[in-house]
Image (cartoon, rainbow, N blue to C red):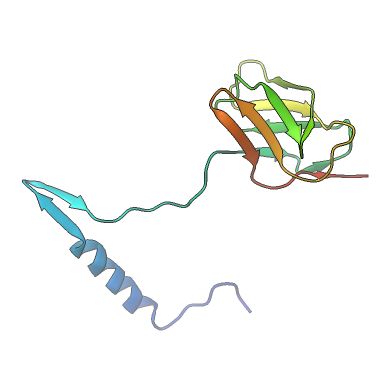
Length: 123
């Protein structure tokens, strides 16, 4: 069974959505303001490459504005890390002894960033 299935109602739904978006406006002087917004609900996060590894393995952590990073933890266990030279989007860290499967967290001057997927510590 496919994840998404085409429905005969899809064209009608698309037409209703188009009408809703066209009619959902407010006019203020000569400017048109749309009365809708879209949010995917995702805050800033970091990504690990790879997503699993053994204690001592070197892991790339990718994100934005990582230059001022003050700490990196693997499910709460502090790790030795370094910001890649000339990059504010990449950190390298070693999986620390005692780390368990869970989120990777990076603390920067802008706040704390957590991984979008748990890092799996292999035996």
